[in-house]
Length: 458
Image (cartoon, rainbow, N blue to C red; front, side, top):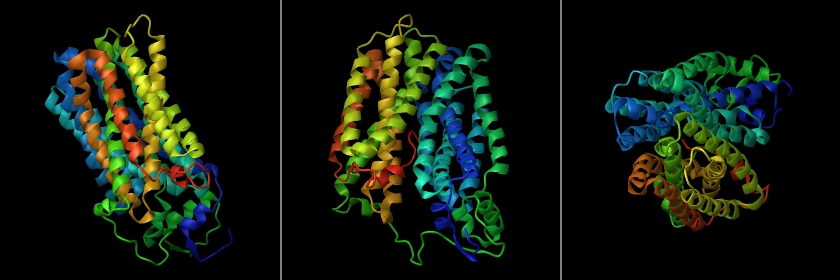
């Protein structure tokens, strides 16, 4: 880049090169979301041990399981606001430290009330991390690399869940559930302290604050831009025009009402179904005679399927468009769920069951992750943030209800009823997706909404 005095940061980064330094920044950001995914699934893995130690039934943990997503619902909103005020990198790392410290405190829990309160507080941090990580990842990289950066963020949630399951299988049988939460707290704290030294603030955030310009110049030089010391910076994408204010009411204007209702139903039921699996698969399997390590291993395979599903789903939607892709994947998920509901849960012969868990976890996660791309396509720029944020908030209500729905189905009809819940929920997702009119078109050039999606399960 030639020497200049006035620099448009957004344009410089969007049109710039893709350097190893930027890849390092994306990797660092992705690590925080892997840890977010780990922390989000620790309690589900620990419940069989807690049931034994505290002498409680599985259903007694419904409120404790619901507390975290309820906190995430609030934390997601608060975290986004905090990121705008103090910087996305600072808000992200403070969110990581907050959920890590609370997770560490969970290792000292001695009852359900304390456990539920601490999981709620952890949820505040978990919810605050994701929006700031997604924004930070997208703002570090050139426009053409943004799909990679966001996709990498998407797959980190189920990847973290798989790691949580593997860690649980290794730690709980030897050291107990308390050590699981000690590790779940200490590791993120150490990583966050390291990242405070390594990760720079969002370049767009620094561009709007003159006192941060020396840091911004240093960052741009690391990326490879020859920025003079006396450069001044303009915020990207403003164009001298004030941003139009949007409100939730805009989502229900005649042109958008049908799509909004379809999206609300899709997010609500899809997040409910996904978290019925994430939160209660391990206690369901241990109740059927599986050992805790074997049950956690099954959840790990479920999450590995989710990683593959997120990647494959993004590719399919770009080629076929979201209507065909999402309705097709939802239909396959319905079939897979009812197939699993009819299978015997036999710890001695679980090979085919694990294969079906990979398939079902992959399909559910594929639908959930591509839903963010669909929401981005439905709404125009001026109400896109409001539209996506509101749809995710509605989805979080399903997330909160998941533990109650899952435990009710288990009490009502055992494992067959539990797995049938997935099929019924995905029927409702299918209907909701069919209601949406503005699906992403099936051409690479027109599917830009897919490329700039947002992560799932949070």
